[in-house]
Image: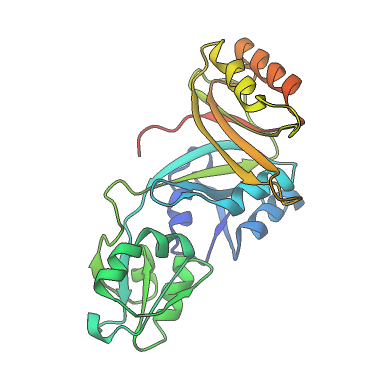
Length: 275
């Protein structure tokens, strides 16, 4: 099995691959962006791709949601919850007052925004494709610090100047493994869908919620994203407990289909345990 993840090696994404049961013993291939990972699975270069979909501090990863809807052909096969510990990584011997730039992916920069304001006010931030790439570049630049993992520090010869700089103790990222198809019911599943509504029909979202409420199906997540076509047009993303092949869930999906303009089935997969 070949699995794609956001590289270079040393990212939190690579760490999450190691926590996925389907990825044990798999060949790992790193790619420079989420879109490249997704395309690699669609083209058959790899069998699966691991993508972050939401973070407990920063919310959903818009790029992943957009890929799932606007590039149909893949489904979520697994979810992985990874506790995230962000660290300030520097070249050995660098002190905090010598840091002149902070490098990282946008998500870690957002997760550590409060700490950065308090301890490195006025120091510019530079957006990198990944935490590992930030660490790689910081290793070659005097005065540059990266935000990332201990694994990234070890791989690129950096030291941890400050540990745990995220703005919350419960910092967890949820990853999803995307493949050509999902699996049958396990008895402890989650299903993800996305849909658009007819804007001229009032109460549409209320009706969709009622489809699940009347069947006693718990909703674990709902949010909206612009549909990229016109202002005021949105795609709604919804997660619910249960597998799409279970009778009451299949009935609910059929009920949603009757009430929406378009429906995207993103996959049914086993729910992950606590991070």
